[in-house]
Image (cartoon, rainbow, N blue to C red; front, side):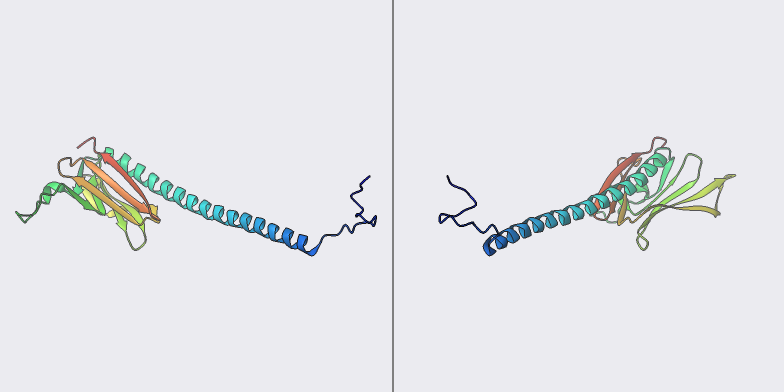
Length: 185
């Protein structure tokens, strides 16, 4: 009968690992740990990107929703006013829209609302000049920051649809395009 613990001469086998077996085991475990470490590193980088995208979308989405709500009840847009900006060059192609990083409009109570992008602080700001007793006063301007960490803001007014406002924002390389329609214009 053959016993695995003895060699062909009947002497007991040495059950220790050889140097080659140890080197192969060490090499394989190194590859496994490197692959696992690479996977962990890649997943943490992806998680940071997903978190940045989520934060940017949340910030821009909140700002866009706030502007949409306010624009829907606005009376008229004061700037950019597509009707007041005809081209002075008769040979110039006809403009179909006007784009600015400032939007000024009058709300349903007569207050003047400014939305503008401050490139220096990377913020979207909102200022309100209250309309009281038929007179707009700059003495009591309410200033608020609507969104932070914004890279770009553009408001576009179409000439053929002056009550339609397109809103483009960009934060950390992620864009958001939204629009609002003035219901009271």
